[in-house]
Length: 124
Image 1 (cartoon, rainbow, N blue to C red):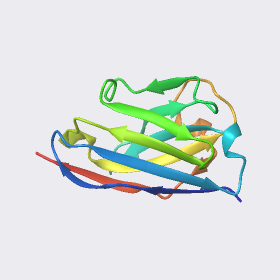
Image 2: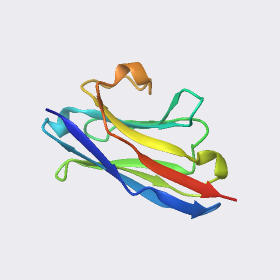
Image 3: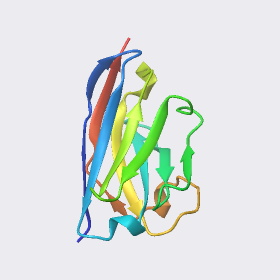
């Protein structure tokens, strides 16, 4: 069974940085495209960033371009989300997700495996 476990969330002030990690077990990590999503209560889940299985391709939501980067370490079965210049509107529960194909789209319905989430709170 594929399991995803996120960590690294927390509370920071506006302008600060956080790095989220997601460790994947029970599957073949280096064949998965990975993504980060975020969710604010009362709103839909937003795709934030995605990376292909061998890091050749990435994609970002317009709202985070230039501030967030996504990377992965296939030897550690881990995907990262480096978040810089954080804003209060980045406050959300952040989830990592995995799928077996790369399309470049960051759509919730395309991803099969999900973690439980890690909370990020940015104060002004």
